[in-house]
Picture 1: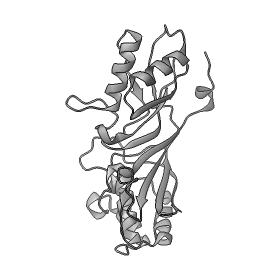
Picture 2: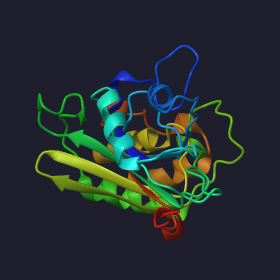
Picture 3: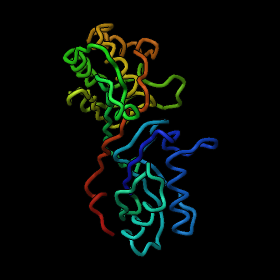
Length: 246
């Protein structure tokens, strides 16, 4: 299934014992509609307050008569900040997390105060050198170890990620950072954006970003930007999975 959500009211995607999450809400809704306990496997995690324009998850169930009817009923059942775009059959070996080839995030920075974007972006009323920020962003593609941008004390086996693209674009007063990689560490995009904004403000040079990455020290990088400006926008899968119809 593919779905989207506005993350303000949730403590991220993954189910937690003492906090409301997107996974919990979706699982409860599906379990109620299908009359059985449904467990979802998501394509990955998003942190508290982060949004998703395109998210995938898989579940096992073999008695669904009409997928289109289930989509309609599920959307009617879910709160307004979660929407299901489609539910479709895949092979028994398909895996929402492990089969994902890449993930793309956007981070929205608003340059002028905008009441309609205050819950959707990070407002920064500073002069920014976008050219320098793009130069610094291009250096990310030359490295694979991003421990400097990882949440401290996180339990991961490797800090290696392959970044395919990273760049800033300007759309009127909205400045958007887009980054695509095979995987991301916890807090990684928000730490990268915070560091690149330091470059834009002249506090760091583009070359300093190389030094920060090589240090493998989170304390050397810039501050993390707020979660409300971060969007998971695309997850890429092999065509054999998405085009399977059972």
